[in-house]
Each structure stands twice: as C-alpha cells, then as structure tokens.
Length: 238
Ligand code: SF4
Image (cartoon, rainbow, N blue to C red; front, top):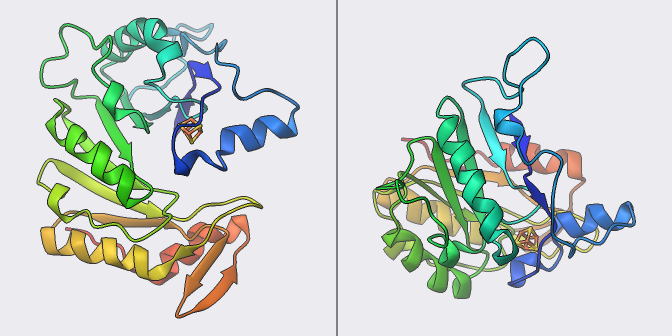
C-alpha cells in the first residue's frame, strides 16, 4: 500500500468529521489542519527515482488524499492536474474516499466518460442522515468502482435501497482516538445483514476505541481494533 497526499488540511463538514484524525495528528505537531495547502508530494505519481523508475511502483493501490478530501472546494483547480496524473498512471489503482461526493463532478476531466478504470471512489456515510443525502447522488454518478464506507459508524443505518450491484463493497468501522464515540456491534451487524441479503461484500474493518457488544462497553487499544473486528468473523464475501 502506498499513499499520495497531493494536498493537506481540510474543513469539517459533517458529524463524522468531529474527531478527524488529520486534525488530531496536526495538533500533536502544532499544525493548523484547517489550512489547506498543496504538498511537496503533489506530483508524486509522475516522479521518478534516480535510476529512472517511478517512485510509485506499477500495480500498487494508492491511498489518495488521505490527509484531506479530494473534492474540497479549495482544491478544485489542483484537482485538474491530479486527475491528469491519475489517468497517466493507468498502471496504478487510486482509492479515493470522500465526504463530498456531491462535488464529484466539479472539474471532472472531459474524457472521464463512465469513469477511469483505475479509480475506486468510496462515499462515506456515518449516519442515516448522511446516507440519505450522499448515497442517492453516489449511485447516479459515472464511476466504475464504487464502495460505501460507514466509518466512523455513529448509529444504525438502513442502507438497503442503495445496495445495488454497482456497489462493490461496504466497509464499516468504529472511531479511534481519545474522544472516540461509541460504536455498537448491533449497528455493524445490521449493515452486514443488509449486505448479505443483497449479495454485496461486507468488511468489518475495526471496532474503534469504544465498542459496545451485548450491552457491555469495551475500551479497545488502537493496535487491537482491527484484530478484534477480524475476530468477530462477520465479513461477508461472495
Ligand atoms: S472530510 Fe475527512 S479529512 Fe476532512 S475534516 Fe472530515 S474527516 Fe477530516
């Protein structure tokens, strides 16, 4: 796995942003996460090493814009060249997760068509309200690879009407960090049930730091959150 963060910093827009990890990390380094700036890695996909090879190895999945939001207003102009680089590096696969799916079409390349084959877009919905707003928009967009991310999961979500065959995967998980809000196993399992009914793959990624199961609250250390989710054994695979 490789990361490409062409810009850094973000603005909070919904409940899922409350304890944003970009803000948490920047605070530790006394940086202002609300200052949105291009990074030195802006051209990373086309950068080469001294021996002439690309720094990003062909075949890799690139976690794109994980210290910001790819569709942020402030990045509208920067995104034009970012899309060009994504198209140029068709030997890489770019994973982009956003809370701004409603802005997806702003400065979309004219040759986008029904989507670049090397791009997966994840639309986040942390609660029912955001699912109701974002997922109808997401379903209509021309994107080849679509996933839904329910993380940090903040309540029970009924997703079933948006679980169409165009959705390749649904991922759920709790919130990490000292201020983490509770994630309830029942909410996670409810999503899993909807996915299995609709034959859409489901992955329980992490429990988060405060996890409730059978009415009991568990405080789970960061290093154990993925492991505990895996132990639940509730992933649904086709
Ligand atoms: S959209 Fe993502 S990166 Fe931006 S503030 Fe919200 S959680 Fe943080």
